[in-house]
Each structure stands twice: as structure tokens, then as C-alpha cells.
Amino acid sequence: MRLYDVEIASRLLLGTAQYPSPDVLADAVRASGTGLVTVSLRRESAGQRAGQSFWSLIQDLGVRVLPNTAGCHSAREAVTTAQMAREVFGTDWIKLEVIGEQDTLAPDVFGLVEAARILSEDGFRVFPYTTEDLVAAERLLRAGCRVLMPWGAPIGSGRGLNNPFGLRAMRAHFPGVPLVVDAGIGLPSHAAAAMELGYDAVLLNSAVSQSGDPVAMAAAFRLAVEAGHAARLADPMEPRDMASPSTPVLGQAVL
Amino acid sequence: MSPPRRVLVRGAGVAGLACAVALAEAGATVTLAEAGPTIGSGASWKAGGMLGPWCEAETAPAGLVELALPALDWWRRQVPATRSAGTLVLALSRDGGELARYARRTEGHRTLDAGQLDALEPAFEGRFGRALFYPGEAHLDPRAALPALAHRLRALGGVVLTGRPDIPDGRFDDVVDCRGHAAREVLPGLRGVRGEMLLLRAPGVGLSRPVRLLHPRTPVYVVPRDDDVFMVGATMIESEERGPPRLRSMMELMGAAYALHPGFGEAEILEFAADLRPAFGDNMPRVVRDGATLHVNGMFRHGFLLAPVLAGQVVDAVLGGGSEPPAALVPLSRMR
Image (cartoon, rainbow over all chains, first blue to last red; front, side, top):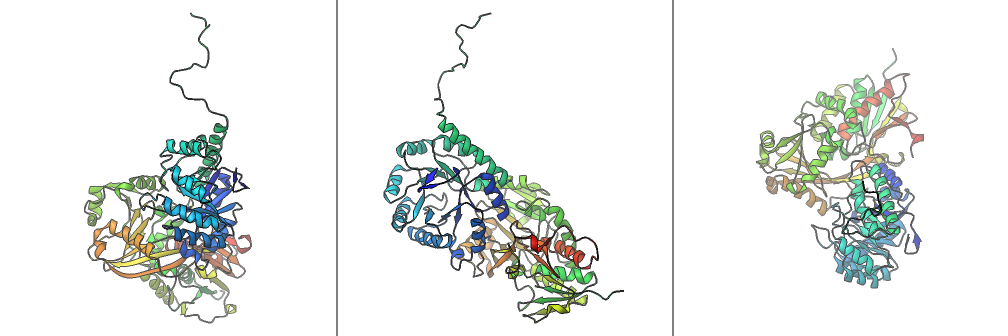
């Protein structure tokens, strides 16, 4: 899978927040086989690089890092956070999150498009966390994004794909754009379903970090993402209304 | 008979004080040196003081409960004011799934319905339909417990020095370094995890035991102290910044306290503070040997819970004679 002209080994992208410990996080990353992890940059950590100890642990994982503007509520705040992240992590990749609503943590697509434009012009490679809205998606592409990351369901809700129809429409509408389902995944079957819809990858965090055994769950997601992707490539059969016996009935001996 | 072993303990937080008292009780001549102006100048002073191995086991490596159980008796012996009233775990009705998950992942609890909960803790007046009760857990006030340990140490002939005392290590047979995050330069892999807390006086609340409120975004606990004072904690942020608490964190802690009991709406804010929990990669403490120095560090959230256990390991290592060091002792060379 290529994202911004970089080959990423795995179609499972993993968040690094809220694990029981950094050691469990490291084991989960290994078990997931991921090639790209997100890490959120809190403003109070960035000031005097006070989060350096944890960031060093993330960078020691040996996988590419995608910093995240998690918790930003305005385009301006997101842009500032992205600039700090570029300095701290030495990458121009940024997962752009602009939160518009406190209860659902729904993206503010207006602020998102604005921040995406500013950051793209500044040389960032923007991974926008958005909805399945096609118009917003179109605007994000116009703003310079080359990857789109629609939500499956609200962040941390674990509800799976709330709007499979919308996600399918988005896939059909943007056949050439890498699409990642980001947020809302709770189970490996949700991740497999996203891949079966033709998505290029899934990004998840809580489903692994909040499970009882994050390392085992990371391995389960690795298998599910591989299975869903393989199934997509294998061109699944169409569902039918009528039963269709796999062995022909005609010509069988009648006793 | 050989003369008593002279031991210098650096750092008068919970780890240092527990080690100093345990060593003195075992016959060592102990000097406790604290760089801060008073004992408890660091993270221990801001701790919850919950002795809750069953609840903590939710996110800790397996074996925490068995490891920590002797600590409860140790505290009851050292600090008679330790209260053995158990712990309540609650969730708001829309987060009922959190309670089910917590029940699945922990032991040592029983489920209470609304009536049983109100019988145990009348202050809730039926606002919560269900709770988990951990009857074996206990709690103490760190600001009473730490001075009690210092008092005990002096009574055993130990010396407590504060305010950057100048002490050459050479006068001692052993050095036990319990400086927490301050030892970061010499302990590879040690990091600080920022925590913020609140101290409230709320005469209208009347909770008598620690309560943990589960919440998918911001789990919070409230621990009663004497005189209607409550400690509310604590955030966990992967940052080593010691600066004052942030408004968002305070809103989360206050919001959770208010959701737990409306009486907190009228509470006086006595104090808010932030500090760094020292932690290793697995968030579990350890005793590390570096020549004649033993490091006791990485207490993370488990300072009061595990300090007596580590103190026991230190006593074995320092005074145990020729016996094998305990398995938990990690030589510094083996650490990252």
C-alpha cells in the first residue's frame, strides 16, 4: 500500500494511546504487524518537549510515525499542533483531527478543510479524519490531501461501520484515492468489513488498547485486516435471493 | 557480633520512608536524606493513598494482587489510621458497559444493587443503580502516613535530614536510592508520567470510602480524608512537565466529582497540584542494583501499594547476608 508515495507494509494502522504500559504497547505493535502508528501530541507535552521520554519509546518501535492533532477544536489550534509535531517527530506527515462536537467528537469538516489547505501549502502530507460526506471529501482533495480517512463510528465508540452505504459510496466515488476507515472500530469483524468494502486500510486504537489482552487483540486485527483485503481481491460472490445448491440437483438419482 | 550496617536512603517519599523504616526495624542504622525542604516534597504527597490491589489489577501485569497483599497489613501496622472500608466502583447509567467490563477484568468484588449500595454508602441516595464493592481494599492519607513513618524511623534511632543535606556516600555500607523521577539520569528507561489532582472540602457529601467512577474518557477516583476533605485524582499524561494543572484536566476531575455527588458543587477548592509518577516500561516498580547502591524506583501509580513489598526486598538484599538476591532485583547492566 502506498501513502504519499511511501510503501507501507501493513494495512492496519495503530494508535498508541491508553495502553496499560509502554511495554504492552510495544508488544501490541509487534503483534499487529503495523507499519504506521499514530501518536497524539498534547500541547502541554510539546512546550518544553516534556513528552520526549514517551515519544522516544514510540520512535524506538521501529515503525513509521504519523503524528496526530488529537483533541484540537479549531483549524488554528490544529495547524499549530501540526507544526509542533513536525519539529518533534521530524516528519511532515500529519493526521489532521479538528473536532467539531463534544459528545460525538465528530469532525468539523469546515475547519478541517481550512487546516488541510494551510498545512498542504506548508508542505505537510495531510491525513484528514473526516466523515463519509462526499462534498467534504472533494474539498479535502482540492485542499491538497491525497489520502482520506472517513470515520466508521465516533472515536472510541467501538460500534463498527455505522454507515456502510456511505462508506461504499465513498469508495465508488474516489476509486483512485487511498481510503482509510479511521475510528469507531471495535471488533476484528468491523475491520474485515471495511476491507471487504474495498478500503485500503483501517486505523484503530481503543479496540486494541482497551481490550483485556491488547497483544492478542492486535494479532486478531492483523488477521482480520489480511482476511478482509484478501477477500476483496478474490472478488466475492454476489448475494442472491434464492438458494443455489452447490451440487446440481438435476440428474441425481431419485430413490 | 558485627556492628549494625549503616545505610543511607535517598528520597523521603513513600518508597524511601518505607525502605528506611523496614531497614531500621531489621537492625540497620539508617540515615534518610531528602533533597526537598520537607519529607513528602514529591509525588507521594499528592497520591490518592488507595490500597486497592484488586482494582489496580485491571491494568497491571498479572500477579499484582498476590504481590501487594502483605502491604495492606504492613500499613495497618505502621499507620493505625489506615481505614479498611473497601472501595466502590461506579459508572453513570449511560456507561453501564464500563462497569460490566471492569467486573469481568477484576476479582475480589461483589455487585451491589441500589438498595445495598445505599445501605453501605447512604450519601448516594439512590443515584446509582449498581456498583461493584471491593471489601478487602483500604485507604490512608499520605499526609498523615508519611510523617508517621518518619516518626517511626526516628523512634528506631534513624536520622532524617531534609533540604539538600550534604552527605558523602562513603560513610555508609549501602545506599538505597529512592529519589523517584529525580533518578532519571542514572536509571535507563525511567520516565515521568504526569498526574494532576485536586483537594476539596465538601461538608455536604459524606462519602466514607474511596469511590472510582468509570468513564470511557476520564476515569476518576475520590478518596475521603478527615474533616470532610476529599482528594480527587488523577490524570495520566505521558509528559514530564511539572507545571501547574491545566484547566481541561481540572474540569474533568471536577465534572466527575460533581457527577458522583451534587454536594461537590459547593466544595471549597483547597489545592490543585501536578507531579510526575516515576515509571519503567512495564509500569511496575523494581529494585535495581548498581554496585553498592540499590535503586528502588518506578512506583508509577502503586507507590503506597507496593513500597512495603519493595522495602522487604531491600532488607533482604542489604541484610540478607550471603543468600541469593530476590528475583525482583534487576542488575543495572540488564536494563535498557
